[in-house]
Length: 70
Image (cartoon, rainbow, N blue to C red; front, top):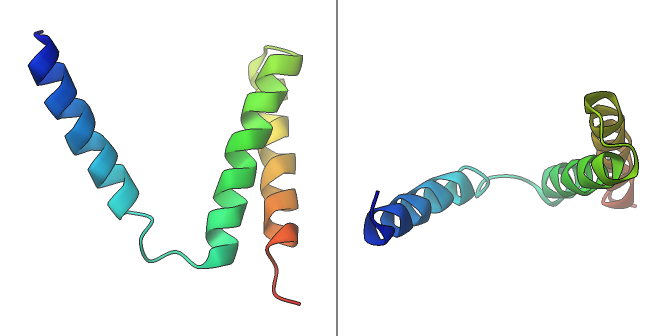
């Protein structure tokens, strides 16, 4: 696959992915961001699927609570 096709595909997929989050509330975005950060942290700490999933779950809960309206 040529570089230009790869670049166009990446741009199309990223724009499609980002447009799916356009209608999310602030708290939903915080939950998703927390899950991503937690999953990455769990993977870096243990390197297994279980640690990645646990990190994503904990990160999602923390992101949800941090962005909750007071």
